[in-house]
Length: 117
Image 1 (tube, rainbow, N blue to C red):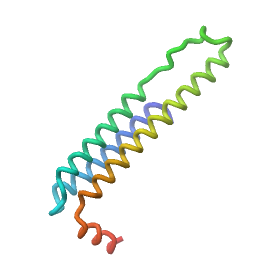
Image 2: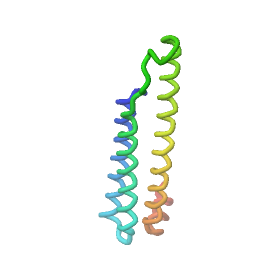
Image 3: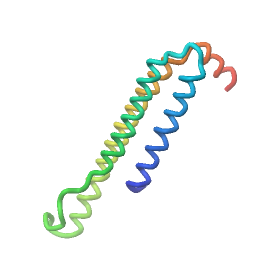
Image 4: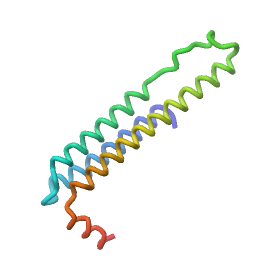
């Protein structure tokens, strides 16, 4: 997955989650709107941070290495580590937002969803 595809995927996940959370916010009686607002803010923050962090560049040039192969290897490792960290941070924030969102949903709705599943 290249940088552009990554950013689009992060944006799609964030937008989809916010859409679902806002649907519950406006349509479920008894939902804790304050917690849902915080959860949405977490998702938006995680999405923005992931997209911004994906814009980093490898700051060393070819001349800083013995040959082109070493440069390519170092650059590949840099981006591999960078995107692993971005993905990990994004997933942690999304998980925290989902936990908060699940706390905001009334128990009756949760039980109703279990029966319908």
